[in-house]
Image 1: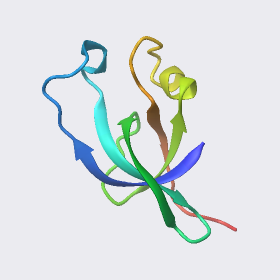
Image 2 (image 1 turned 60 degrees about the vertical axis):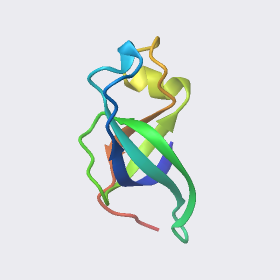
Image 3 (image 1 turned 90 degrees about the vertical axis):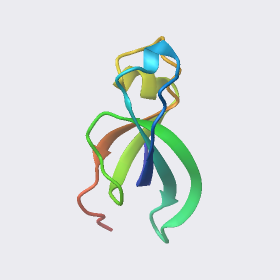
Image 4 (image 1 turned 90 degrees about the horizontal axis):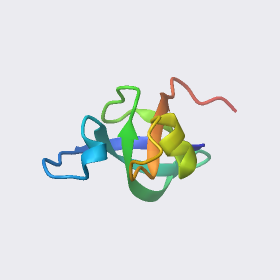
Length: 87
């Protein structure tokens, strides 16, 4: 799992049919210790995350498993919203 911050959303009226119905969010992967931005990715949102929220992300086959759709071209999925960071 990875930590990220939601920075926006993606609207796509034409897309692969298996992605229909999924909410797509732009997420900055971050390093918790200094909140350094590592990369921006587009992730399927399964939990209703909003802009500015810190989230848990899974990538690869785990992302497709979380979405319960092994056939969809999903590479990253938001699976949780982080309430607090604790050392």
